[in-house]
Length: 324
Image (cartoon, rainbow, N blue to C red; front, top):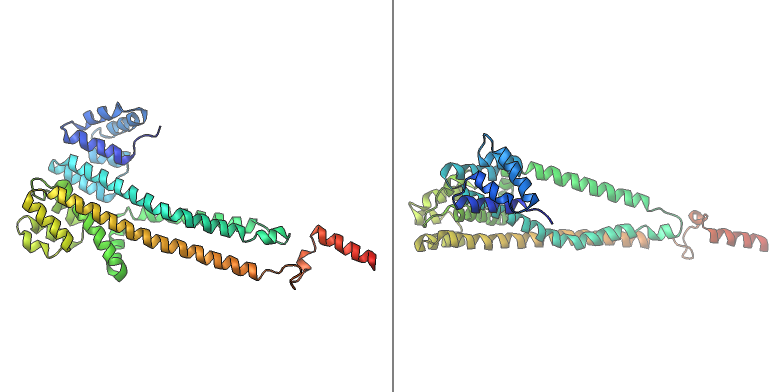
C-alpha cells in the first residue's frame, strides 16, 4: 500500500497543530498510521533538532519559496496550523490540475506516437526501410522533452524566475486574464486560510510577497477601508470579500471563490492543451499521409531499383532470364 502524499502529511500536521499538539507530538501521532508514515515522522522529528517545523519540512518534503514564506509567517504569528492547511490545499489543487491536464494529453500523445511509428511500416514491409531511425528519433524527442520539463520545473521553484514568468504572463493580452484569475485564486486562498471572525489576519503580510502589488495593497486596506479597497479587485472577488466581512463568514466565502477560480483556470488550461495536442496529431497525420502518397511502389510507375533485394523480385528476374 502506498504511503501518504506530502499534501496528506501537511494536512495531518495542520490538524494536529490546530488541536494544540506540539510538532513532536504531531509526529508521534502520524507515526502510528503505518510504516511509511513512521518513516516520514522519524525523518521530520530528526530534522527538527535545533530547527523550527518550517525548516524541517523544507528538508523532508522540499518546500518551494512561497510555501516556505507562508509557513514561516504562520509560525511567527502563531498561525502554523492555518499555514500548513494552506500548503496542503495548495499541493492538492496543483496535483488535481496536473492530473486533469495529463488526462487530456494521453490520447493525442498515443495517437501521435502510433502515427509516427507506423509511418515507415510500408517501406519496412517492402524491404526498403528500417524502423530504427524513427525509434531513435522518438527516444531522443522523449529524452529532450523530459529534460526540458525537469529544467523548467526546477527553474520555476526559484522566486525571481517564477515572478518573472508571472509578470510576462500578465503582459500578454490573451494570457493576462488567465493569470489574473489564478492570482485572485491565490489571494482568496491566503485570506480563507488566515481569516478569523471576518478579519483578514496575517494574509496581507503574505500577499505583499506572493501577489501583484495592486491586490496586496487592496488586502492591506480591506480591514480598515473595505469599500475603498474593493475597486482594486475584480467584481467576483470584491463581492466575496465584502459579503464575507459583512456576514462574518469571510473564510467560507473566499474558500468558495477560490474553488470556482481554480476550476475556471483548469478548464481554460485543458482547452488550450487540447488545442495544442490535437494540432500536433493533425500535423503528424498530414506528414504521414504525404509520405505515403509520395512513396514509390511497384506497379505504380515508381523506380524499382531500390527493391532489388526482395526475394520475390529476384526469383522473378531468374524466371525472365530463363525465358530469354
